[in-house]
Image (cartoon, rainbow, N blue to C red; front, side, top):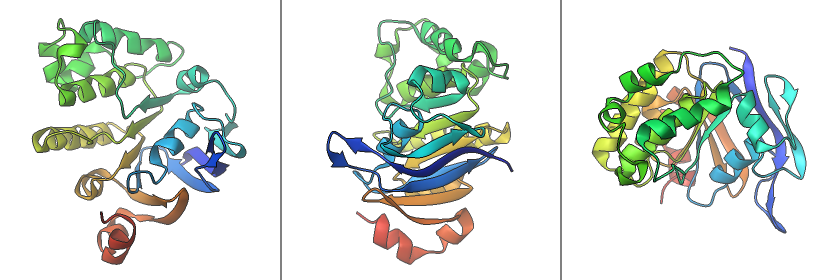
Length: 236
């Protein structure tokens, strides 16, 4: 599998606070890489840096071999980095269908499999609710809408930032099944997650971030058997 997204020793700050320290990892085409860590470990900051919502003070981000460091976020989206943010950011007054159609704007220059028919096939609840305002959906349904809206732009990499946070066990299972279906159609996914069980069910590889440093990387089978690492970096 070819490398598609590379973080190369990125150092990011909030004001004067140094948050990420030489963070490096690679996402390969067609795989699901899970970035794991406790709250405050630096997961969301890493995602914001990859799409250039935060520009690293040191280090580089490469997408499809191109240095995108310092590029405007809307340009990284148009290139094919599709971020599903932790806070969802749906347009509450707009209908579900209108939210989805807005998602196509980021993919105008790119052909792909995603359109309304396929989205409704993958997300039948959204088809049922397509005329409802997005703001009336439950938290789990809004999460589905945000993912579907991002897919409508036919991203080359789907970045899911803490997708299971705040969801009921039923919705977590629904999300797990969805991610596995996305994998089946070849979607490249970078996932940020604290839910170990969920991560182990959907990921090919794992990287653990702690206090802004990458502390561990492995394939998923090695991670499943490494209880010491789980206890050291992921236990609450």
